[in-house]
Each structure stands twice: as structure tokens, then as C-alpha cells.
Image (cartoon, rainbow, N blue to C red):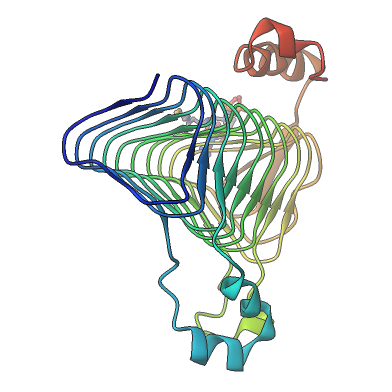
Length: 252
Ligand SMILES: CC(C)(COP(=O)(O)OP(=O)(O)OC[C@H]1O[C@@H](n2cnc3c(N)ncnc32)[C@H](O)[C@@H]1OP(=O)(O)O)[C@@H](O)C(=O)NCCC(=O)NCCS
């Protein structure tokens, strides 16, 4: 059974799974598929076209041609999209995805199962995010960057792909965050850097260079010590809790 609130607009061509709930004033554009039992809050916009100036961008970089593909947007089963959230077109979200209030996922993002982007978070265009990640409030995941599995960010973490502050798409490249990385509140990870598996980045750190696996980094590229086995195990226990028991066995 589908439960919809007042003033909901569902365009022709939307596919709704079983037991989907949709709050007041929400708009769902054509080409969207929503998985079973997903709950969508009030005032959400799902599947809206990306706000890019196609002619200029395609001329500048053929990479943007993908934005003219037919509309397609999939939200996995048991997801929760909170009120005032926006999901643009060509987005693929895994099951049990949670999107906080006023958060936004821009076009062509792809996100694995059991991932949360909390209140006012932003996933920019064409990001690739794995499963079991938790991004706390206000985190900005920059265009085209990659986050693998089981990562955690505190609030207002900022990833930046535009190190040189110019719109030259050939030079824009975002960070790669390997599996099980943790990043404290307000940290900035700038440019084409790799943060290695199990690393911990301290609150308010500024990272502009690669961080080796299992490293604790604080301040400006300051590597303090390695992460212990106990710290890794303790963290993995909490990551397992993000997935239901039936899925926990396939986590490392
Ligand atoms: C980095 C962190 C993980 C602790 O690592 P740790 O190795 O256990 O650090 P310690 O507390 O033993 O401190 C070691 C040194 O690093 C310094 N330090 C710790 N965290 C720091 C930070 N974020 N920035 C700068 N220096 C820091 C300490 O002052 C200490 O310096 P000293 O050797 O000169 O006395 C932790 O301090 C941190 O920043 N956590 C993130 C918290 C957060 O943002 N949580 C989000 C909640 S949603």
C-alpha cells in the first residue's frame, strides 16, 4: 500500500515499491524508482534535473555528456529520505540509505547499501560512495570523489576537489578515502590525496598530502602515530552495527 500526504506530485513514469510512504508537498519526477518500504518526508524533491549549463559544460569537457542521458534515479528498499531533502537525477542509492533533513544528493552520485548522509550534508555530482558509511551533519562530499566502505565523518567535514580555486575541469580531482577511515569534526581534506585504510584524521585537521594506512593525522599533515589493532577492532564492531545482523557477516 502506498501512503501519500497532501499536495504530493508523482509524475507519470515513477515506479513505487510496496508500502512506500510519501509526506506532504513532496515532488517525484519522472524516471524515479523507489524501493519497498521507503519513507519519504515532507517537501522533498526527488529526481530533479541537475542544474548545469549543458552547452557550456559539454563544450568545455565531454565528460559532461553523461548529463544528457535519459533520466534515471533509483532509491533502494527500506531507505529514509527526511523532510526538505533533494535527490537529483541519475542517482543510484543502495538499500537502507538515510538522507537527513535539508540534505542533497546531486546528479550521477552512486551510493552503496546502509549509508547515511545526515542533516544538511551534500553529495556533489558523480561521487562514488561505498556501503556502511556514516557522514554526520553538514559534511560535503565533493564532485567525482571516491569513498570506499565503512567510513565515518564527524560534523561539517569538507572534501575539496578544486585545490587551485579555478574552474578548469582537467585539473579538478577529489580525494580517495579508503575503507574504514574516520575523520573528526570540521576537518578539510583538500585535492587529489589518498587517505589510507583504517586511518584516523583528527578534528579540524587540514590534509593536503596522502595519509598512509592506519595513521593518526592531526593539524596540518601531522602524522602522530599508527592506529592499534585494538582500535581497529573496536571500530569494526560499531561499523557492523550499521548493518542488520544478516548482513554483518560479509563485513571484514
Ligand atoms: C586525533 C584524536 C582521534 C585523538 O588521537 P590520540 O592519538 O588518542 O591523541 P591524544 O589525545 O593522545 O593526543 C596526542 C597529541 O595530539 C594532540 N591532538 C589530539 N587531537 C588533536 C587534534 N584534533 N588536533 C590537533 N592536535 C591534536 C594532543 O593535543 C596531543 O598533543 P601533545 O602530544 O603535544 O600533548 C582525537 O583527538 C580527535 O581529534 N578526534 C576527533 C573527534 C571528533 O571530531 N569527533 C566527531 C564526533 S561526531
